[in-house]
Length: 241
Image (cartoon, rainbow, N blue to C red):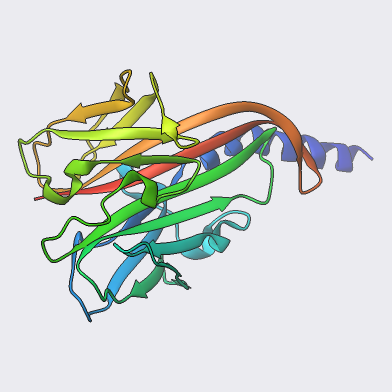
């Protein structure tokens, strides 16, 4: 009896310690910013801490995180669901562009298990530009409940201001904390203005990750377990030339 009680206590302590670190992690998409018609474009999905270059091996992803959905939306708004496969430290998928413009890649997953009293909802997006056209570079291409978008993304350059809009339930997200992470791990937290915007001037070239997390006070039942909060996170890749 004492042994069972000790096991239960140990499990609860582990959950208290591990749950925050689990949902603090992010899922994010990486891909080359430019694509070519008729040539396969690689999409990579990672899990971990981008700023620390702390990447969780694919076979160690928790719960059913590997069952995320990955969709590519073409400039003409054609949606194609992608199939991914596990590699050592990521999941990999491909698509082949067939038109000029901006393709939006969108990932979403609501985790099966409730951690503590929290339901976890992961969202991510990135874009691929084919040719010089900007057709398709629209916030509405991403229909996830929480998202980020930048008109400046297709022309982002060092020392040029980049403006990003935070969206929640299809509306601008005012006065929300947004994190920008540079390629070298440097990060800065900014607050969105009345238009849901944050701006930053990239010093370095490379991939920048923008993160927007929001916790909704809501209770319910999820796969047989109760929750009283829903933690939602969006990540967004910006490649600076």
